Length: 117
Image (tube, rainbow, N blue to C red; front, side, top):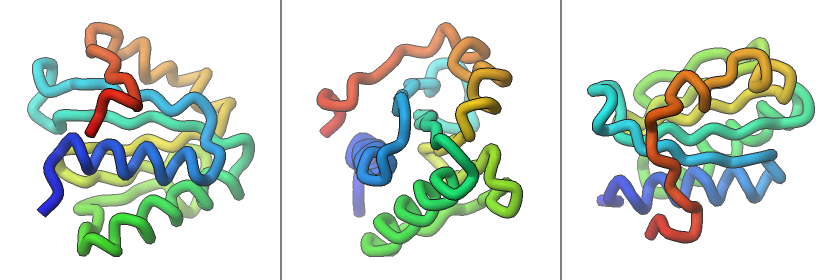
């Protein structure tokens, strides 16, 4: 079984593999009960957003990890993949700027990608 820190890194790495823009990891465990981490990433267009989601799902499936919930894939402007302890938000650039999820969770500590093991 993969620990939470490793799961977050695998998700972030899979996003970066698909050239996701501005991948951010927020530690939200002290702020909410819904997850320990949010991973936020962006794609330039709907095709890239879906490609990022597909790559994350394919990568985690190799570890027999499936999302408990997913939403937004058909539209491709804001895809959410819920892996219980970690929730991945993949936005198209325009939606990411509009919703400002990082600002809504401004009190969350940002984890550096290289510090997650």
